[in-house]
Image (cartoon, helix red, strand yellow):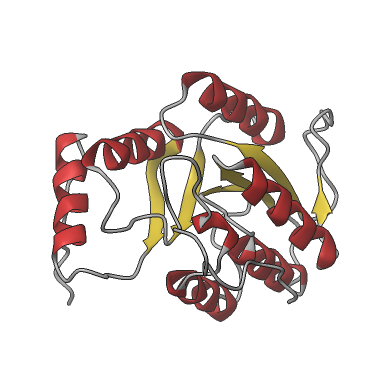
Length: 214
């Protein structure tokens, strides 16, 4: 695949009071999620995948490009979302660069004939934007929820507890019963960020369960 992204943050902070350019860079955990999709013979969810914090679009490009090579009777819908308009524009360019079909905002058909993507603005916890996404999902699949939500490197040591709670509330809103939320992130401060994430998940009604094998 061919991906356009920022190469460096030299000369400025990644995140400040006035800007956030994290979505314009490619981060390590994105590669892990890409590797996962490339190892799958076929995505387990034929209906629709919702991506949070798509950034420059690497994960979606890899997943859709890989899926294009696998014969299937089901068209895959992929909805890439991010809160940053610059990241969304970069994502759109990368989808086009790799020959992927992007549905227009005014397209209403619920039966696309090829693997296609939507690129939409979504700020976690924003009611208006979440309603828009629900409408898009319903138009495409007949449901306002999905079986699979994916995200890569959207959690950092500087991510506040409040932001994590909004993230998890957003996941809870869009995820079907027994659906899967795949979050790939690199631990940059030992156990602190995972512990903060687990605490936020617990406070929003999520639970950790373990299943014994054998």
